[in-house]
Image 1 (cartoon, one colour):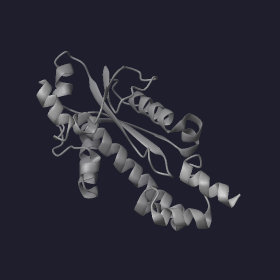
Image 2 (image 1 turned 180 degrees about the vertical axis):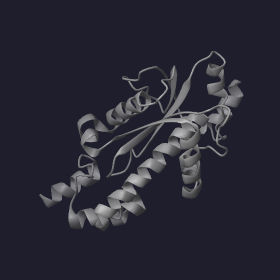
Image 3 (image 1 turned 180 degrees about the horizontal axis):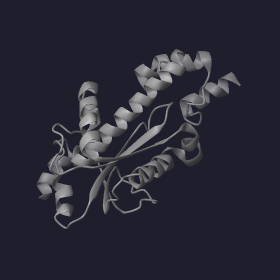
Length: 216
């Protein structure tokens, strides 16, 4: 991939398989790794690792944020049926103990370790390579818009987390988790003011900490 092609991909082009292809040519197994849920005030951060079958790559893979919920769900089913997938989540307690960055990197490493086939290299979305990764790692800024493997991981992580939030909505409907997925919307903040935080909330995050301080 030329420098100009790489820059074009970095700034908005759709992801492709060129990075993985360079390593496959050397006989290496490559997975993509991404997360969902670093920013919300409630629920887990979820990570996924995906090894795509290069002969059976689902069409339409892209950064999960650029896809509709319906398209993500459809691609999730295709990915789960055709690829090797590892998933790990870190609950609010782990986020509190490790901070959000540490919890995310730990969960990323665990997702890779849970794969049924161990890769030789993990392509990681972002700037950091998890320290406990069981293989070589390469960080890719905006990786979900550059690598199909990372894009697939972003879809798996996003759909998995959304479904977990839907389940939380059933146990605490007063918070509306099924709608905002734990993000700090006006409705969510109003529910926190009225009902206080639950064990599913990240009480060390500033908006919640401020509410709890006012209530104490």
